[in-house]
Image (tube, rainbow, N blue to C red; front, side, top):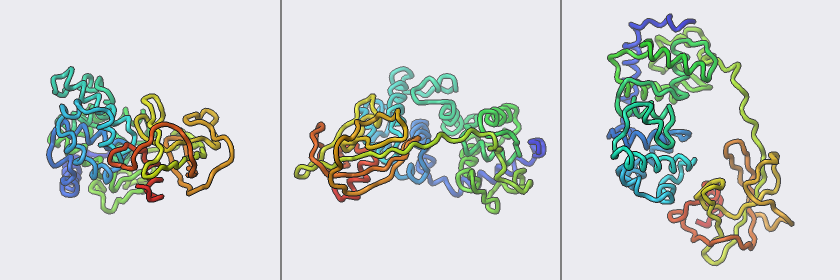
Length: 349
């Protein structure tokens, strides 16, 4: 069905209902209670590739450590990464710090107000720039993430295949005024669409019975809400490679051997157990040296995944000599998440 099936006159009613639901259910989120552009920047970067429940537990802690843009800009990279611990994808933390430094150094601590200027900041792409304008500044803009793309495709019955073309179609609809009634708050609209996409209108599950947009949703009227957006032509996911790693526990008293990854290395800035490759289905994976010789005493095994790699971690105990010894204190050492999980399971921290 065409997007024209939805009457513009029904939009204020449908979206006002949606925004009321969002306000009732999610206004207590810490980044929504006290609005600042700095807080919006931090929350949006945190929420990329990380769940709301995880960010909820870290946001206030991070802002307590770095309450202002100036505080973040003045912090060391290690300090920021330590405060980021538990959120993963540490490049986000490093870019967030660089963005703060750029704002303090080049913009006198003030955020640019245009998309073109915002995307010049380190780590700020089109989506984050749009979110800063729409959510942070409450100005007319649509921050199209996966949730907004999916909800818009279903509500308007857009038949376009998921991906850049669908993104452009939604953007064009926004620019022509087809999906954004002037009387609706840009901030409330964007957040409400994201909320409903996260809670009711998920990629593989649609709880249409409770969805605030159900009454005017074309995908629901079609009887096949999960058929929108079309995914038939979406490229297959990158195949996963299996890698077997040997991770070595080498203890001396109350200390354990750790290796801090260099800036240009995998998991830069984080501390790992000495790690070796036992076998890999990807010949190009050379992040660690190869294990040579027989295996020492095996303590446990643990699975983990990073990007296109599925790891089987074999933890062994041995005496090796590879760098600095780090005290067993997760509060003081920026352990990688896998290393920290291993140490906790072995009751070493």
